[in-house]
Image 1: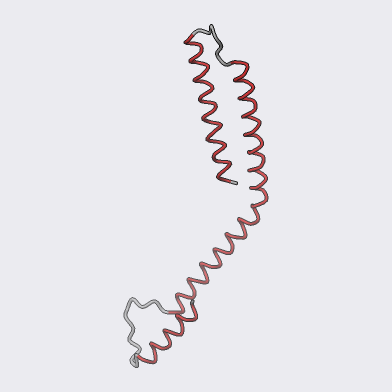
Image 2: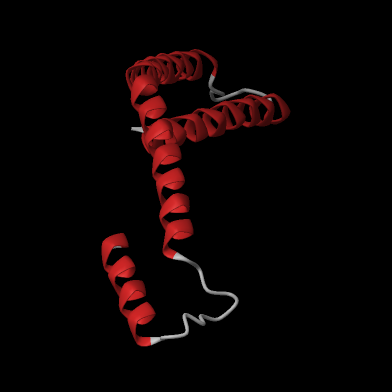
Length: 117
């Protein structure tokens, strides 16, 4: 607590009659000024974050919905394009590779959204 530190400095001044503090002594006035400046910056930043909170929550919900839509579309595409018996191996591998990439991107996007929630 800043007040307790100030009281400690006053006590030291009484005990050190010559007022000879070390050269690197951080005076209470300076410490309090820096603490006040830190708190002012923190409060300002906190107000800015709070003012953007609703917009950010809306964005996350929109992205969540879009991610779900992309998943449903990927599922539909897979059901219509998945390799079936009799397909050429090279073509099957290409289709699987393409869907694997799409699924990986979708998974990464989903994980980011979950983290943001």
